[in-house]
Image (cartoon, rainbow, N blue to C red; front, side, top):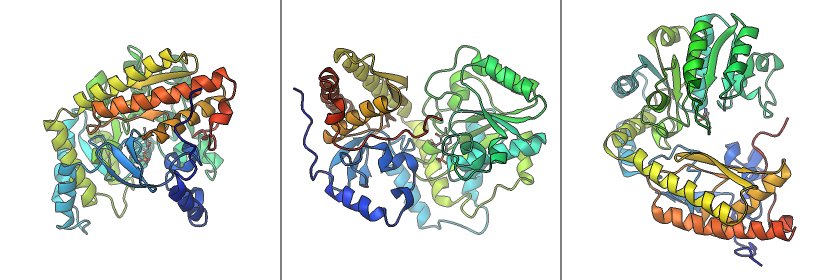
Length: 435
Ligand SMILES: Cc1ncc(COP(=O)(O)O)c(C=O)c1O
């Protein structure tokens, strides 16, 4: 019988003690849902991280893990990247925040306008949600229309999250103005635009989520948006710098009216940006998109340093190589363990996601056991990977060795019909529940 890596008693003692404390101090015990204990098998996983370097993270009990979520994607260069750290430290000693606009924010805006051929203006935010929500407001203002059609995940603000199963607290009247549409289905989008003819302010979408666009799909979306007078917004918070240095435009050759970038732009230092055509962006003269830390200098300095690195180092080639090795190796292991009907993998080297068969609980149980066994062997993942410039082939090998053992536990648990008993913690929760 393939056994678990250990019995877990005591392995996560400090994390679990901190979790107990957090129950009295922090609602949901985390600041970000996807980092919380709900996404890791509670009792058989770390809950709190303490430090990170390169492609590694250390938990509160002192265990080191190969870090695959990389803080939900921003760490494209890896944790603690020297050129970014140096730029941030240098800026810190020259002032972190000012009472006037800064030269550096202007220079970064100009640099991004040069970087993306369709961009004529730039406005900065701190989170991806700032950028997507600002872009949506601009689209509403410039078109005088209210309805938003969306595809993908776009952040925590009312206009989007109200369409999901995590929309508590969002007025129904707000949620009713946003309609999700399925990816790669031009007929569905066409129908929605006809149903809401003359009322759609914006089509906002992740130009590629996990699966690539079908041939001609993005071009057809572009054409529909133009014909219906809707602003086309590409949400590139994930794709930005991971599919191509020029994002979806570079990869697929389709230009949006507005684009939103976040995550990797600052390599972990918060900064996001809305880029786009002048005739739409200039509505920000009137539209209120303004906050104390808009243009804060640490994010600006980090982003400028990130762009320098992306220009001079083979970041994407490396991420593609590491990611491809991880994807190929994982698929081979799943096949070798006879689990191809239970576990799949989709996506691209820079971001790929496992699929666990079985409705609801069964799929989540598979995911939880895989996480538990990976964690016990030094691999932090939540069913997906976001490789970085810091990850190495050795990390891939160690990760695949850990998954080999983990899949052995799963295969054995399925064969003996006792998979639930293999899980030493709680089953993880779905980020968005089934409605
Ligand atoms: C595609 C996409 N858009 C927007 C956001 C929101 O970004 P943030 O969480 O930084 O507000 C995210 C966050 O995961 C995202 O993946």
